[in-house]
Image 1 (cartoon, rainbow, N blue to C red):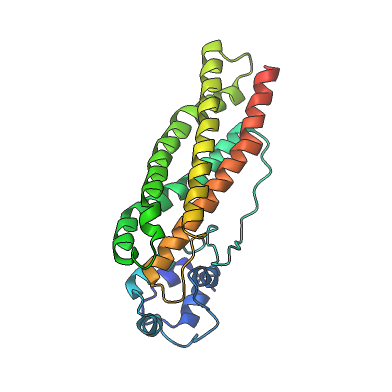
Image 2: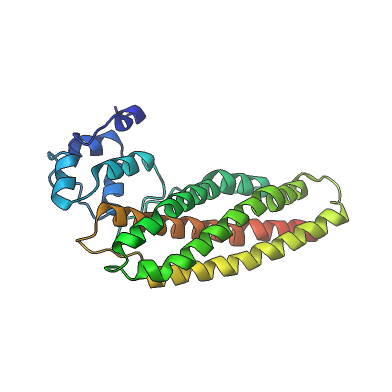
Length: 251
C-alpha cells in the first residue's frame, strides 16, 4: 500500500522503482523534467543524478514537495487535471479558488522567486531567455502578491456578502463590489499579457537534454504557474464573474 510517509522517508539511495512505487504521481513528476521513469528503474537516484550531473538533494526534495500534486506538467505540455466541481454558488467558487489555485500560485511564486536569480546567473549565457524574462517574471510575482491579497481580503468577502444577503445588499457595498470587479478584470488583462510574454520568451519553458535538474525544476515551476494561474483566471471569468453579475442584476 502506498503511503505518504514512504515517500517522505526515501533517500538518494532509493531506486527509481522505489520512488515510483511510493506515490502514483511520481512518474508524471519525473517525466515533467525529462526523465523517463521506465528506464534504469533499478538504479538509485544518486546514480542517475551522478550520470546526468544533477543535484540529487534538490531533485529528491522537489519530488517530495510536489507529490500528489495536480499541477505536475509533462515537458510535452500535457497534464493530468483534477476535475472541477460543479459550482452552485459564489461562495463555493471563491472557497475553491482560495484553497486550490491561490495557494498553489502562492507556493510556486515563492519557489520561483527564491531560485530564479541563482539559476539565471548560472545558466543565463546558455539560456538567454532567463535574463530576458527575469524582469517580467518578477513583475508578475509582485502583481500576484497584491492580487491574492486583494481577492482574499476585499473581492471575495464582498462577493460572499452578496451571496448571503437575503435582502438587497447595501448600496455602498454594491458599488464597492462593482469597483472590485473592474479591478479584477483589468488585472486579468495584465496578467494574461505577462503570462503570454514569459511563455513566448522562454520558448514554452523549453530545456534541452543537457539541462541540469535545477533548470528543469525551474521550468516546471514556471509552466505550473502558467497553467494554474490561467485556470484560475478562466474560472473567475467563466464562472465567478457571471454569477456575481447575474445576482446583482436580480437583486
